[in-house]
Length: 263
Image (tube, rainbow, N blue to C red; front, side, top):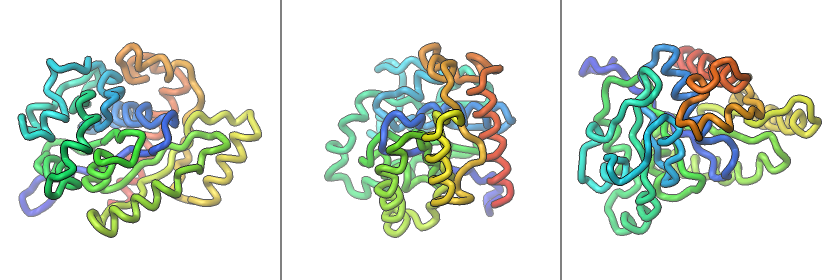
């Protein structure tokens, strides 16, 4: 509790500029898993593709107030918060108009801290999870500037570490210039197949390099995880008995345990 008596909100950016690593799948299902564990969660979709938006049952479109309207100053953040198909989980939808935000904000003063200024007014949530675009553009920089920490999904493939050094360098720059408290929350191994030698080698290499930052929980390749977004449901709503659901619930518990120890 701070001096105002408000409960402290934790802000987590889910980021990796490499596409196809399970970033949005992780943002959606970690958010839903935390909500299942009685946490009040806000998922902020910072990606113009709006996959996290549709993944929690919200149809992206001009009819919805979305993050672009909030950033443009047309509406308040509170007006853009919508309920989802998961109890305790709310979302700020994205829209394809976010594609042009880099150019629109190019001449704007303090353009890197617009999202932070909006989010700091929030109360009533335990966690805010920000799904970043697969790039290191303005929206990702805004999310990193607003975040307490960064969760990085890594696909268990040959090029898993390719580009990770660039992301770590970006995190370091943001920490030095804009957000001194920023740190890496953890690295999550996704699309893991323990039966393959490659998967085992990649996992071992990542654990050697990053040690305790790597979550014990791994997310396997799972067809039900791949199907759930097209049905507009987190995995717990779509197939709660699947391996994917088991993994993301385990991740949510591990995530909470880490945060409680740090607190």
